[in-house]
Length: 290
Image (cartoon, rainbow, N blue to C red):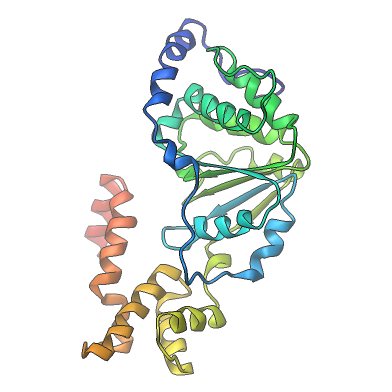
């Protein structure tokens, strides 16, 4: 693991060649993705989870669940009420180059701190990240969304560096469908501490299911809530899609209550957001099993 101010896997000439193209790589990134998602209206807030966020100061908060569980939306609500500075980074595959990731994190945090930190040098970003994380001018929340895109050992080690150097008044939030590199999680649970929010936590309970259906203009009774809850097991995206279809019954659309999971709205979402993200071998296996 990385400690102190050392860069992950310093590789001599190879690192210098990569460093030479970092500025170009950073320049092509879409800077709009640094602002986080937009909070839409009608969001079920799941305030029962607020204690998780409140207890994450000085720690790592991991929000890991499959597509459609409202991970980013939940975190966006949390940080929206936080008085600390918040910096949100939507990770992409390009961030598997540790120099690219280091430059982005250093440049982003340096925007919060206009002092003598110099992020322009090719050899500087790892030291800059360590300094900015460990000794910030003020407490911060760093959100790294789509952590499942990080598959390289080097970028995973940079995230370990961030965790190791995290200041006690700040929070690192990792959001994604999974985290590929979890070898150091056990150690991080001891110091600085790791708090997990999973699909089971994010799944809607009965009251939240009723709130969501009501927000769609429905008047759900206990039979509707129970039936739809059993079919989707609290999966927020499935519940919302099914609720939208149920709301169209007023326009004469015939919907069988016990077949909501078979609706094209739901299966299309699963195909696009889950099945399409699997590799070819896994897709073939599931197709054969099905």
